[in-house]
Image (tube, rainbow, N blue to C red; front, side, top):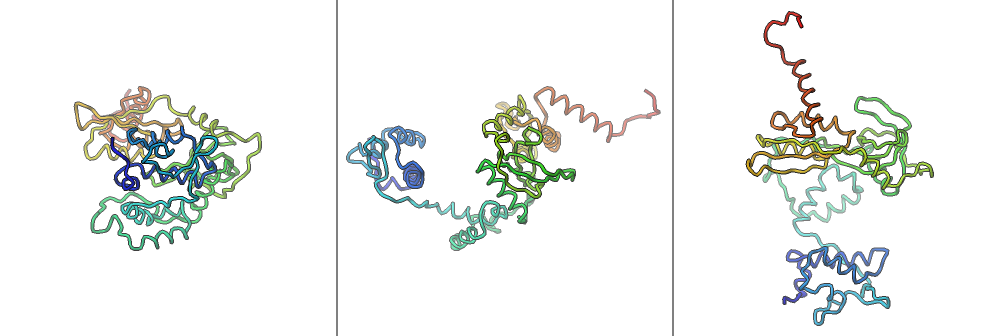
Length: 347
């Protein structure tokens, strides 16, 4: 049987023990619960997939001489607590520091971090090389990106995130895509989503005015403020999730993709903000099947994005969506493609 060496325990690149010990100690140190049961220790070891022959659970509970770790002490009720009153600082890999230095340059980082925090990270990474330099990568077709995060977007994003975290409602005005201004709206924020294609953040919320889930662009919000929900307005997250799930289409739209000119990559990019699943054809390496899971209020958006994929993407199912797309294509054909022959106004 192979023993668990102390030199291996904290060798991050070699095994998962370091991550487990890091989580265990910091959870006990920072968490509200200062003890852990034998079952919870066993569950954690199983979660990390550490082989049973290592007897790590027994080593953590000091029942595996001479390989006991003595990180935990056993309490009178059989649970375990930390022997030392200390945490373990997170030690990032060198490659993680390089990625962080690159990511910190993205303007959207201001949505998540304070300016002071960003400045501190930049200072700490001053001597770290950027993982991507101008000499190593050339991007021919840039994705549309938010070059500037204005204070209005930053304020709205953080206020909505705060409402989600604290189970509060919001009151706001909203400018729709066709520039209609909706005033004095109320909703309960549920979750934020991001579209890579549009470089836009969306909010899924439960409208208290319409009593249904809605999807809104973050950039459309105006004069937003947090509100405490009255008892008759309070809806649990579980109930909101159930109401959203009811709006989910009964089956996904499945499209067959002939992977010519990077059609699959373009499709995955188009549907980056949707739940999706890809399968490949075992007989033809260029054929893939993309299943798109969506909500009924997103159907028009999904069909529009399928249109943009062109002739290398064909709807396979469901039949009603396939028929609807065919009818739309017929309308477009009649509208934009001239008829052959002489049309003299007959039947």
